[in-house]
Amino acid sequence: AAVAIHRGDFTAADAAARAAADTLGRASLAPKRRLARVLEARAALGLGDASRANRIARSTLRSATIAGDDWIVYQCQSVIAEAARAAGRRVASLAAYREAISAVE
Image 1 (cartoon, rainbow, N blue to C red):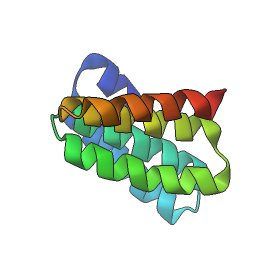
Image 2 (image 1 turned 30 degrees about the horizontal axis):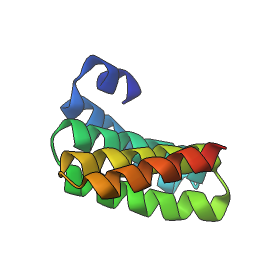
Image 3 (image 1 turned 60 degrees about the vertical axis):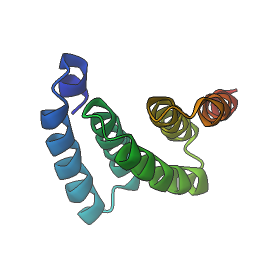
C-alpha cells in the first residue's frame, strides 16, 4: 500500500491497505493493523475522500493512544490535519498539525 501511495495509485493503495488491515485484525497483530489503517486513510485522502480519511485516522488514533504507539499517533494526527486542510478547515488543520508535532516531541 505504501508503494502504491508513493506511485500515486490511491485505488490500489486503498485496496491493499484494507486487505492488510482485515488480515492483520484477524491475526491479532494490532500494531501492524494500525499501520495498515493509516495507509488506508492516506489512500482515502489521495482519492479525495477527506471525510473517510478523517474517520479512519480518528479511529486508529484512539487505538494508538491507548497502546502508547507515538509514531502511529503522529501519523494519525498528520492525516487528520491533511483531511481538515482538504476540507478547508484551516484552524482545525493547524491544531492537528500541532498535535502531530507534540506526539513525537
